[in-house]
Image (cartoon, rainbow, N blue to C red; front, side):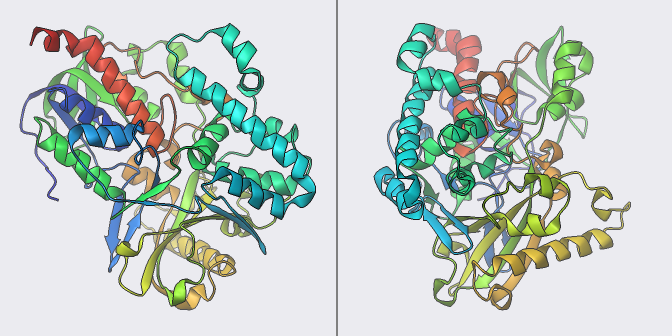
Length: 513
């Protein structure tokens, strides 16, 4: 579709900074209520971290590719698309994901009983502990669902009916797993899904892990969108553009305008000022409070908290166009691979051990429609530090050494992943890379963190960040706020943000109308 590049008006009801899923969901919900919305995006394509790009016949997902909450009624994206009369074609993912280490394979079947049986067959000596683990996870998910569904939480109900949730709600994934298993190998296999948090088990919020587990193993499971996530993004953009709003690309916001401690609009880097009753930022906390706003508008304690927040980890991404060759190594949509299963890799990764970095990761195989016949688009992502002792060998405008370093990492990934995709080197016909610096440049995510704030105990759940900010008429949505990162999760954030804005600013207008 053709995207807009120029702002048509000097004033809107609501201005939203960022066209990621959170920003678009917020905007669509407001536009469906007759609110005029302007969404501004600094990149030349919409979607934020959920974007796709096309290179030499191959289309790649730059971020999330599997979606939940979209297939069945009650899912936040399903209900939103139904409300606005948009449809996307879905393909259920089975297995939801696969974990591989050497010759061991664990398939996460969408049927929970089948998945449990797969775990038992791989670790027959752990049958009793496996049964305890699954029973505990289901009880804890009940507690999470209770808390999520209540406007006012009754502590007595938590303590009497959801004791396991109460026990582990402020603990790490490591603390939970150690209560059920002593074998590090089964712990690694069962928690590999939580690699998305980019944190070691000791730092990771158990509730964040449990939420990911629930999304993948309960309810509708995961789906691919036919044509990729750009199909969803374009449907949302089109609705906004045709219902009294605009999504304008290649427009960077320089400042959030504030008058009498109230947000009143924005100023672009070209100096154009656009006014609004409400402003929503989906940018990082660092961008929002330290660049777009004057620090003096917030308390010193608040600014210090923003400066001390831990960011999620970033990735080295290797995008490959490869020959299909009967689908060898491409059988599954998402495969987590790990080199060794008894030692957490994080300490070595953050010490810049390239062998560890390039032998642990996620292999993503795109839908067949995203590549020419006989070929497949593949993304191999590996956790890698944002901070490099030589700043990735970037010297001013000279990036030759940086490019050589990227090539070295890519070669090591290809060599190490060949055990999972046979003859990988010989099958490659296209190759491209992205580093944390690339991710930061295109998304403005602080330190290239694809999950926004790290999902540790201090930054998860209600303590993650409020949708309502300390600045009047300024709101936040997305992965830096409650409930957290991920397509489905930021969709919830955007929905909550729109509801809050409607209730606090525009409900009286609708009532009068």
